[in-house]
Image 1 (cartoon, rainbow, N blue to C red):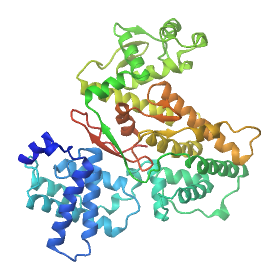
Image 2 (image 1 turned 180 degrees about the vertical axis):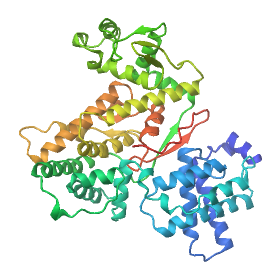
Image 3 (image 1 turned 120 degrees about the vertical axis):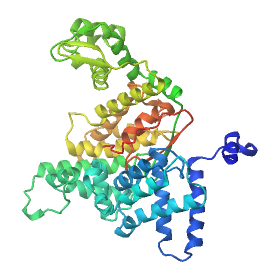
Length: 469
């Protein structure tokens, strides 16, 4: 109790511990405890690494306290998060996870660090019930598309901190037959095909080679390499909601939700009638040409917030009638979750459009996700190299064509997110504002864009979902 009070007051004027410092302090004590029990045990380093990894994932997805392990948290982190997020480990490491975490619980209990509000027996049982974790590691059903591709890279021994090595892997990956790549990214077995029996499609080969060239060129433009998690602080709920409510995206969704309160009539496709659409064009001061559109679905500035309002449940559609759905003026925590859901749906539309093929889309997002991550670190993602790739002058040969096309797509994605208020451009860099970051992080957190999340006092925890595809 005294220690907790001292930390609250900032003992002797010191700042409170960061999550990293707290984990380091407790894990250093665990290291000494292991050494005292069995000084020369060859598995001590692995057990220590298991505990540290579990605590870091817990800080990212639940809370930063490395000594606070409820049964459901242990099940989620050890049984779900670690198998989905850790790639490239051997069987001995996987086999050490359950006994290592049980040893860590022993340490917490015996040194008085165990939190009394948790049921020690229930936590031990939850960990023990996980049994053999090996089938969960590398299970495609637990990984995102990016995770499955990177798992394949890890199996080949690719060094993720070496951009050239990752470029070379992606070049070889994109040169493989389309059916094989689709099978791998959809979770199928990555058995190598018999290339001698595969028909040669010169157009497809040229396209895939171009995509690989574009990926190699654009991956070098990512400002912050995804070799370690970026730390993001989730602000207090009031602060986060104020930032979300100030974005063009959330403002427009809420405007539309308020407008449908008395009940409105829409077309058979669920779109606003033309008279209503034109009123919104005037209200939001959209370009004059938008009012001449033949359908609301052709006006993205209205159609997108309308669709997101429907998807998030604040607008309820029943045939040709719409009315207010879920309330938008509830407790601030509910509003924060609603705002994050709107950001997530926007990212879905931006990152997974319907007008681009799978190979090109995969390659673009191998660039786009790390760039979004870079926007969460001062001074943000540098744009000069991307703009230069877009502005390549004169006739384009194959080596320049695909980098130019892909750079253009990435730049349009950034501009779209800027228009909706998720990104701010300043001094040649793109930045995601601090209080808007949680919704982005919750959506894209993955091996391509790893984050470590710190909740501030009064923050709304991020959803525990680890599926960031």
